[in-house]
Every structure is written in structure tokens, then in C-alpha cells.
Length: 469
Image (cartoon, rainbow, N blue to C red; front, side, top):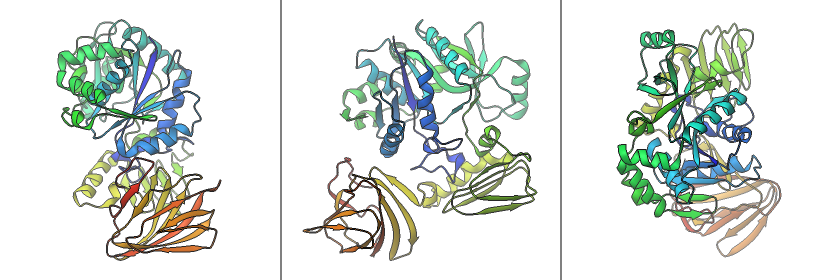
């Protein structure tokens, strides 16, 4: 009965826009230190007894970024990444992971379900809470972790405690007056979204309360396909699966729910306000990141990613700058940032989806300039990596090497380019870019044509299994 961590790494963290985007979500961002939230979640596991290498559940579009971040930790143990062809909320993700473990004959393993984007400051207290939860899970209980509240919070759901470890009920996010009552009673805990149960116990309870979900995800595993460290759930089976949270599908219905009180220095960092609360601050209560100048500023969060940000006379304000967006808001309205993201989606603006820098399995590209008929990009190719063999119908490309060495297939020609050397690739020409060197390849690409979208790519060969993008 080993301890099998299941890390849920989906979601976009829309309340942390403009830093968090759909293709670069908060769990892969370094918000509180040198490592991303996903990386710190994985590192946290090393202090646990009897723990196996993690299973990470993630959306297809984040697969390579997730893999790169985990590999950067230099873990000796193997890990597995389960790929969701579509987002279906937490209940299908957890059931899919459980079915995957059961399929390996490990139904009695304790699954420790952890969101990838939470902060836990007290490592020893966390390990103690996990040990207590695992013991209950081995008794057949469906265990949730309840966080001891230290203020009346309206952004979290609550757990009402019953006798002993029994859960009396789960409560929706309250208004401020109700949250104050919960805090004063001492009988309510924040719902952390962390769980522990055996794979078999979860499957049995899901069959009672949400049978379609567990059946669909069992089929998604049966029809899924391995690909190195990746395992893709069957798309047809998962498409048929209802979308629901584990709270609604199971926790509010089961009579096996137990709660472990966890005073572990927890935050879900669900908003800029939440990040300010846990961040290191100066003598004036300011959390500052990047190239920032403050003059008479108090109790604010100011973050610069690309350029100098200067502020004067601010109180209780957040200011966040990225290459393509600036957010300014009162700290107590930080939960409303999601409204901006919703509006960007309705207006079909790209700023909710991508940054100017987009990460690919081979490296990254940064859009430096974009106009109707041309755009300029900086392309970085990792040592030993190569792009797909491809062709564009509507654009011509000019490549200039800035540093490193480029191996280029340009039609029937194969050439090596070094610093300050260039090549031109006409439209409808099959081409490929590769870095044969041991240092990153940097080049400037100028695209000219009637259509410059990323979907104007016809791939003939791709070692990363992509069709588009």
C-alpha cells in the first residue's frame, strides 16, 4: 500500500492575469521563489515516507512545458504524465488517474491528490498531515485536508466538522458576514482541494454516486495510449464523460468522508491579493518584483517583467506589467481580475491565451513586432533539438543567426549557418531548423505574407507528435 502522489496540473489561474495565460498557466510560473509552483509541489514530496514517483495529470497543450519543468529538477525516479485531450474538471481527472493505477494492479495504493499550484510553507506539518490522512485512507475513508482558517475568507469553500474526523458538510464560498461566523465558531475549515484515498475506495464510492464518470474514465484508460513518459486518455471516452468537480460528484454525497486538520502554511495563491499576503514585504508592506521604483507607496504589490515600473503615492494597489499588458487595480478587487480575462475571451483578443513568448518542446519564440503583412520573432532552439519538417502556404521567412549554429533544410538544400549568416525560405518550400550545437541557437525570423497565423503550418514529420501549433 504505497503512497502514490497524483498532481493535478490543469487550469489557467485566470485571476493571476496578465502573468498567467492559458498557454502559460500559474502552476508553471515562479511566483514565490526560483522554482515554479509545480516544481515546488514535486519537491515537497521527497520528505514523505513510502512515496512513489508522481503521476501528473495535465492538458495536452501543456505536456511539453510540464515535462521540461519536471526534468529540470533532476529527479532520479521515473514519473508519468497523464494527458487529458480536453478539460473535464477534477472528478474525471482524479478518476482517470485512479483507473490508471488500478490498471497496473495497484488498487490498494493510497492516492495523495494535490493541486500543482498551491503554496505550503510548513513542510514537517504537511508530512504529518499526509501520514494521518494515509492511515485513514487505508481504513477505506475518503479523506480531505481542511486548512485551519486565520481570517474570514470569502474566496474558499468550507468544511463543517462533525464528530471526530467525520465531515458534517461542505459549504459553498460564503459572504463576509457568514465567513466571520464560521471563523468565530471554530468548527469550520477551509476546503483545500487536497485528498487521500485508495484507488479502489475511490472507484467504489464513485460507482455509487457518479457511475458515468468512473465508467467513462475507466474506458479512457483502457483505450489510451502510452508515449514515453506520457499516457494519453482515450479521447472518445473522455469526450463522453460528464464534467464535474470531485466535491460535487463525490465529497458532498459520500458517507465515508473524513477530514484531517492541516495547519501547514497553506495558500492556493488564487489571486494577486493572496500572493501579496504570503509574499515577503518591505517596511512599508510592499511586495516588489523586478525593476521597480516606489515613492510613498504602502501595502501594494508591484511586479515588472520587462521594463521599469515607477509608482507614486499608491495605497493597497496591485500593478503588474508584462510585455503586452499592464494591470492596475485596488488590492481588494483582485478577485475581479477574472472579469478582465472573460472580456478578453469574448472579444477574441490573444492576451488571455498567450504571452509574446511562447514555449515549444524544442525551445521558444518571442514576437517582437507584428503588423498586417509582416512579423518579427526571436527564436530559441535548445541544444540538440529541432523543429518539425514543415511548409507554409502564405508566408515567406528570412532567418538570421544571432548566436550558435543552425542546421537548415531549405527545400533540397542542407546548410549550416553560423553567427551573422542568413537564409531565405520562400512560401510552399519544405524546411526544417535544427540546433546541432551544445549552446542555445538564437535567430531572428522575419515573416512576410498575406497570412501569418500559427495554423499555417503543414507538418510532414515531427518527433513531438504534433499536427498543428
